[in-house]
Amino acid sequence: MDDLLFENIKRVTIIDDDPDVRQSYGFSVEDLALEPILIDGPVQEPATFLAEITSSANAAICDHHLMKVKSYSSCNGAPLVSEMYKMHFPAILCTKYEDASIDEIRPLRRNIPVLLNPSDLEPESFEHGIRLCINEFKGEFVPVRRPWRALVRVEDVDDGKGIDSFFVVVPSWDSNQVIRLFHKDVPENIRSLIVPGKRLHAMVNLGAERYEEIYFEYESWEEK
Image (cartoon, rainbow, N blue to C red):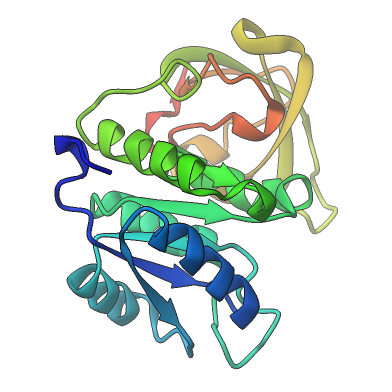
């Protein structure tokens, strides 16, 4: 990391409830001549924890499933990384459960530029991921991440099943792909509009190449 884009990246916080994984990530960080800060836990109340790590480091690597060891954290990693993004603090989210956890992660995906399988975390992928984060903070998006205003059609609703979810299609992305969302993923004034056949608009990253990459900007939803 010798270009100006990374001139302020010196220390990297590593958050994972598995000590062996923390150490492995630390080696990748050291290979870039950076200092790893291994968080042994417990992860405190998120606001306090985030204030501490952003004052002591310049970037982070965070596992998603942080509650496998209950004494380590009271929350998973996606909300932490999302909040870091809002603070313009570059962070990479790691999980080997991407497919299984996508319903949990998607509402936050707008603020999570990089989602990696732990097996793919190497010095090069870390450097690339941090670069993506920093560029987005400046408003520079790669095609798969850039949001566009798009038509969103409600296909079905899970009414009365205790799930509170619904299914949509984004024709300008893939008219054959149904995406599951939850009522909590959209603003309150939109929730009453969600019925089969309803057409809405939202900012969506239409360049996404995979189902797991699609996100919907929370505040952008509006009636057609």
